[in-house]
Image (cartoon, rainbow, N blue to C red):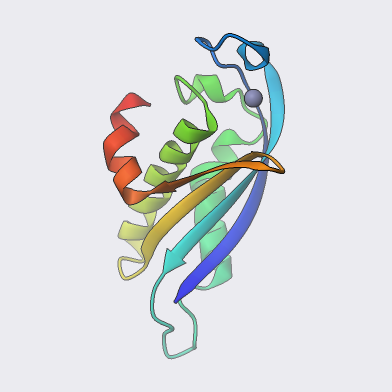
Length: 129
Ligand SMILES: [Zn+2]
């Protein structure tokens, strides 16, 4: 069974090697959707929504919200922001809830534009960030 939770964060970024509007410093209200997979426990829950919220807040939102993402991620495209977020949540879940699988992380830069990152993408691209 899949469980999803959404978050928002407000951040600034610029894309250093991009020619166009996103080359200059600007901000987005990013939307993040975290999807995990697991079996409901004896309380009927895959993971408590509150636990997932705490983990994502501590690992991701507290670092990216009202930050200049370029200080954290070299090339802060939605793609690489997603890869970075995947890594943070993946390691934390492994430590705290090893029976829960992180399926994907989706990052919306606007209401209509998003990127979905799976484990394979994290493995392939994490050294670029
Ligand atoms: Zn942008």
